[in-house]
Image 1 (cartoon, one colour):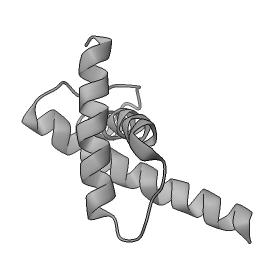
Image 2: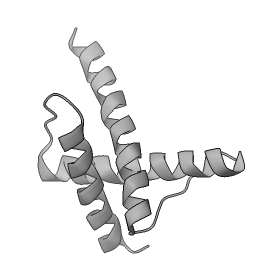
Image 3: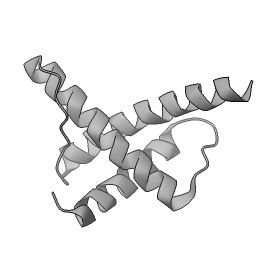
Image 4: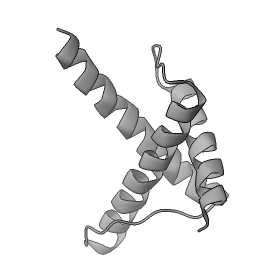
Length: 90
């Protein structure tokens, strides 16, 4: 997938994940895109792991199922980011 498709997938997945996840997440547009791209890799890798049993770095395509997988991965990324930043602030 080319870089423009990664940016679009990251923006869509990150924005949906930030809207779904409770609380306030900062970061702006760039943070949302990066969160979505990381989420796409997390979701794609988990999808491959659950379907084949092999843990490999994978990412979904720019499609409706791909966006859903990327949103699930982005929700995991937001959760982990909140855990990391909450612990360092204490």
